[in-house]
Image (tube, rainbow, N blue to C red):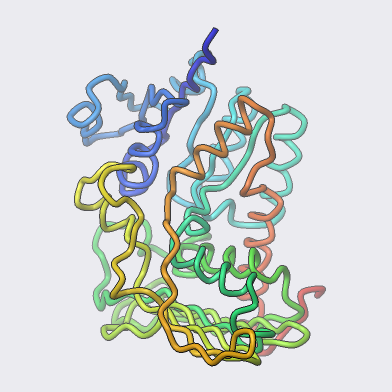
Length: 351
């Protein structure tokens, strides 16, 4: 007897739902994308005629056939909507950021455990090819003992986007919760919790009401991590810079999946997640006594791996790759970054 697919609902169909969730749920045989909440546009039936479009999320909560709900709504609603879904007995995937506060995260984690439901966060950038390559370089000791790691996630958008909740000052809005949640998650995966946080956060664009810039310094016992992002970087620099006692690794460009999705390509088609050789990172290091200057092939990226893990966690009781406790630590780092910026000094993560 075959295992039934997991009936799934998305709580919105903006960019997140359209690009980063629906395509991967659609191509994975273990999921049935059954329902999407759309308040106005009615775009879902045009691309997925078999998927039900509703305007009220409570119809999803009341549907006993739906096992999994993806909370991909505005940041400030994540806690409330995830709590509703868990209380309705659903498994839950929350779009990043997990919550606004660690207190909210702790409550959701406890609730999921009490309900025996899966709770995870869509930290998709763990499944980027460039990040997987950085992990390989570090894990294999290609540059020796790490002394400094710098990561950037820059854009050029010198205007304030009209009629967007992302541009209105409210809790959980701004570049740190938006892009920082990805970058800080990657740092935690690589190195764990730092000893100190020293952050500067602000708005650089004319007329900007929300943070669009950050420079976060994370101090570890023997090395430094620099996490930076800005909406006013027209000429991009490296995405990752890794320095060690035996050399350096530098990577430009960003994972190719997002652009492929914007072009309407479906996961798994063509050379999905494969980066062109011209964009491979460069290493200059001494490896096993030999000086090496070469390009390191970028690992294959694939966000499908996230949902494969969710499927295995629900149907086969396998451990989650993105544990909610880890996502909670991301929010903790965000809170510490804002505190550091307010005090204009480095603070210990134990404060």
